View (cartoon, rainbow, N blue to C red):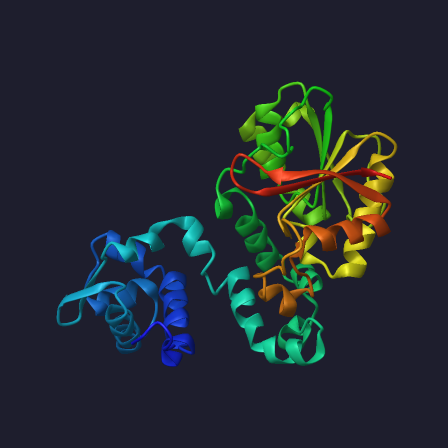
Length: 328
């Protein structure tokens, strides 16, 4: 196949990604790692149908994932060992929030036709309301967004990494506190406030205790579209702003600007790209929430409407693009 040709069968294949998610959800890789290799025993351990599991595994073997050294015997190969990582499995588990994210793609056509999120058409409720109505799914989402799903967060959240005048950080939409915990571990003189919904911050105590920073943290269980705790030096939005369409994004930035005035700053990490080039990626946000990534010029326009002026931007030590703003 020449460079100009495209394998449309590969591009349009739905079988492979769904088969990967099914074996991840069933814990097949973990059973193989424990020494279970015959498909009948694998099916018994995974509580599923053996013939169906064999068909799924043979499809994946053909794609280079797993191997079948003998009839009905399946084993891990090096690519399949990735599925042993709990973070990878959590991102593929159809029984949790990852299943919601996978199913949401069926609304993509309607989202493109209408320009509106279509999660509600698929699951009956808008995304955030669906989490509120399904505590198990919400807990799975919090794990996926926190330490178990993303690993240890990078506490370098300032463009110049200068913390001389920072004594208080408010992590807005900070989930169960993984990011804030690492920031406070790295900066012993700083105290923090975690803002997120009550059901989410209720699970933060063990995160802060494990990090040894519980005595320097307060939590505020609330919507971050409501007025925020005021007077802090830094208001952090880490992988939060991209979840929201422009109207709500402006409201969120406005709340941060109000709370940061007159001398604080608002730091955005995730969802903003450098320069004026068209942003890419985050397509799933079209169907989930109507959110999007934005380039720096687009972000400047949103920030201005919220009463903020961009004062610094640049790549952090981990390569993340960081944008800092202050009340105008």
